Amino acid sequence: MNQSGSDLSAAYRACTLIARREAKNFYYAFLALPKAKRDAICAVYAFMRHADDLSDDETRSRQQRRADLEAWLKSWHSAAAGQATTNLVFQALSDARRRFNIPPELLDHLVQGTAMDLHVPAGGAYDTYATFDDLRQYCYYVASVVGLVCIRIFGYSDPGAEHLAEETGLAFQLTNILRDVREDAARGRIYLPLDEMQRHGVRAEELAGIRTGSQITPGQRALLASIAQRAQSFYESGRELLPLIAADARPALWVLVEIYRDLLRRIERRNYDVFSERVRVPVSVRIAILLRGLLQVLRHRLRGRARR
Image (cartoon, rainbow, N blue to C red; front, top):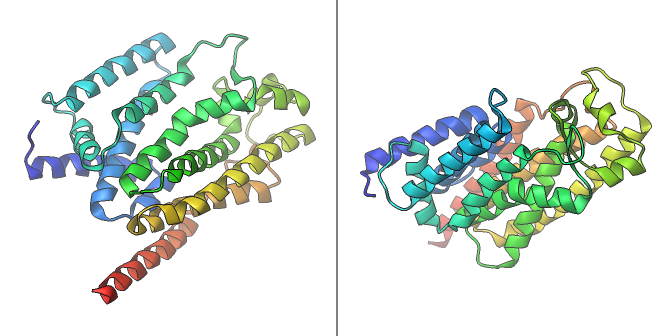
């Protein structure tokens, strides 16, 4: 599929608009990337965003949503194989995939991850995970795979970066799970290991019944603290990953890790009370972190010029 530069520019602009509108924490990190890498990351994000939207469309049954995802993925496969498409996201992603050598199976795994929320609960009214290992498998598809895609775009040569990227994605997803416990449970999704819930005396029914302003119980607090401790350990992988990726992408990863770690710190400072109100990183703090990341970009460019 041959496209003019103006067509590709339009496709990438469409993806950038989606990322700017929807990405929240991620978009601040994107801004610290060189343009070609930023465009590619925005294309991947727009692809993931549409898959999430199809999966989360509660006006349709789970069976219909699975069918929607399968049809959309089939259309993507056709576009990736070179067939003409009017889908701007597919156009941009096809170019990014070729340019940065992104394995096609990783993009399939991204969609597979969103489809995992559409399985029919086997043991009751709630989507649950029996153990942390089961939850980790879910997190691999919805978050660790994102890390594996991103480092292809960032650039790396040490294969050890792949495991570290998986664990960094896991840290982000566990942080999201902590922040969204109340909202997810109200939708019938419990992203906390059942064996750990039982150990702390927490039932799925009580989480699903929590409303804004509810008081957290000692058992709930201990449960969330145990998940936070795991997340903190995985954030150390983000620190180890930084020196393994291309220098021009390190500030972006640093910004992303700092924003998510700040979110986790805010949850910890609230003593894990994520029920009385939604925990957020203020825009002013995100901008401050971004500015520090952009300063790293400037320093990198100045060092590059000095070596010429």
